[in-house]
Length: 121
Image 1 (tube, rainbow, N blue to C red):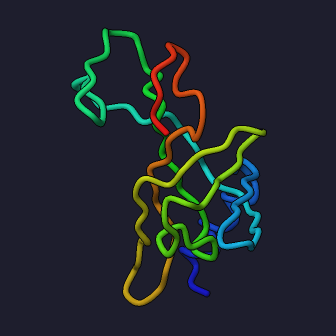
Image 2 (image 1 turned 90 degrees about the horizontal axis):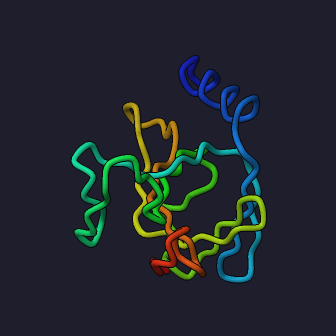
């Protein structure tokens, strides 16, 4: 394991949020970073314009360890964070040379949408 991969793994373990993933009858658990997806121009996925100061678009950025291969899963996978369920919209593996360092994904709430009642699942 490279020094970069060890540092990234350490940060997931120390600072990450616990996530559970259910896919094809299997369950996985790990730590990842989750944050609301924000664009500078305030236009979100599906071209929904948000007023200044509004950040809850119902979409989230996920950055997690390479052993939780969200990029190999489809939208039927359920990612659970603090009892809230999310669907995978897009996921990619980040490589450095031939070494997988982390998985990046866009998640959306599975049920209920955002705090304004907009449904994104």
